[in-house]
Amino acid sequence: MPVYRLADLNIAYEPQYDDTAALLTPFETAGEAHLTLHLSPSAMQEELSRLPAATNGVREAAALLRAVSAQLPAFDRLVLHAASVTMDGHAYTFVAPSGTGKTTHVRLWKQRFAGRAEILNGDRLLVHIRKDGVMAFGGPWRGKEGLGQNAFAPLKGLFLLTRSDMARCEPLSPSEMLPHLLRAVRYPKSEKERLQTLSLLEQLISLVPCYRLYAPLSMSAAEAAFTQTGGIL
Amino acid sequence: MNNPEQLLTENGFYAATVHGHSMEPLLSDHRDTVYIEPCKTYRKRDVILFRRANGQLVLHRLIRTDGDVFLARGDNDRKAETVTPSQILGVMTAFTRNGHTLYVTSRRYRLYSRLWCLSKPTTRLLQTVVRIGRRIR
Amino acid sequence: MKIKNGFALRRFADQWIAVSVDELADTRNTLITLNKTAAFVWEQLQTGTTRDALITALTEHFAVDQAVAAADIDRFLNEAREAGLLDE
Image (tube, rainbow over all chains, first blue to last red; front, side, top):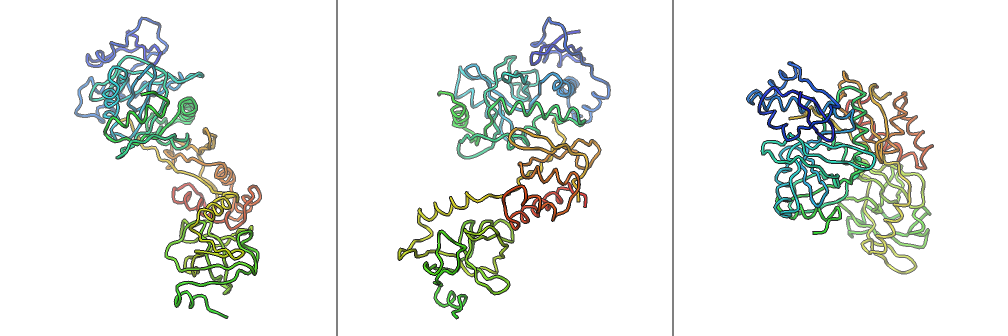
């Protein structure tokens, strides 16, 4: 069974469809598995009802995302619905409801800081929350546009993105950021898992500075975010 | 006895000498004069003239203006009381102290009232209710 | 008067949160962020109390006068009621 390395975790999984295998191949590793995943027929059935018009491969990828999101917290890792960039050796990630313009924003980073900035992932960021900091990983789920790399960097800033006429970036308190992060992660049903996820989110917020980013659809937004975290243009 | 409501309507303002100690150290009993004007909207930290249910005229500061019922308290008082907008005659726009007239729009006064309000303890209860919808699109 | 069952109160960074931990409750997808004073009131409500007792508790524990405490408690209770969190 192939083993894939996602967020520094070796996951054994047998892809059912070629499309899914193609997404995962860049992450293949030789190491021993920490975790083995199987998708039950009911998991696939659930995706069928959610995505009736999608191909089997897309559905399998979605089901796998769901399964991985459920298992990762036990390993101090989370999947965030966010768009992320790397720049000068650090990662920056942007959360917002769908349609706010996360993908556009990370594209603007790449435009403004050509050669320095790369899109780490356009849809789902994997993070490993460690005692000394948070490591951000681009994973196989890259959204419709397929934007992302198999790369990683320490997470330097967590931004709540809001559309606006003028670019502005200001610090955001943990309790203000929390509701938005809750909507960007899988919020478990069971008490134990819920408290575990909340504990990880608390650690995440304590280790990574949070900001509110008022972002117009222009490169000034990327500049505002970068300089707020101490970056030199 | 003059009728403040009437004077406010006729002249557009009402001037009176301060009685009592509830607005010290800003306003001194029997020494300072206040100028009241009618007002349409009230803001926190405004000093207002209002009539209690028992008919008594009171000059106190608004400490809470969100909601239908406001809270007012003298700068030198511990207890606040509830006030409805209908009880309010007007707002203080200027006052004289030791012969000098000070307008509430002046920086010095605004700084005083802001610092004074900050120094008073509050129990503001802050809570936000968050609903997390079922997600993973 | 009580807060509905099925919530766990815990610290979260600079504040407190009340998390629904009852998978079957109507309030199962609700989370409330609270400051220190609100968490204090929430705790009282977890064991059961009255509006008057809450006002007294606030004035005793925090150096504020009764009118301010009453206004704050009433607003808190209204919001909790509207969010379906109170058992009365």
